[in-house]
Image (cartoon, rainbow, N blue to C red; front, side, top):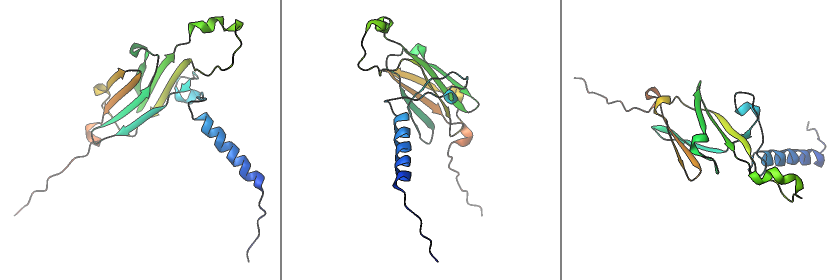
Length: 156
């Protein structure tokens, strides 16, 4: 015997509302803060990244406009890659108390990311380059996780 379930449109609107909140929380419009990403309890905006892999290495890219390469801190800790930096504030913001703001959307302050790496890497062989505000990390895979081809020998 089939049962009839009453449809309530409000239930679907609430889920749409939640989906929209999630969309805005994960966008550049409103970078969300999370102490879980830093590893030290300091809240910072989440740094968006691209991470992909080849047979030999992992490649990570992150955009850090306005940051000097020497101000970026990169560490490996127990299989996690940690990137931290500080987006500088505009010195003109010191006089902001006399202003009438229309928009104040440019983020300044701590930005970072803690990423669990999907495979073991050779931490002593990592290369970091910084060009035009884009950080690129090349993380060579550990020898034991690289694909290998095994030659089959014929035995008579």
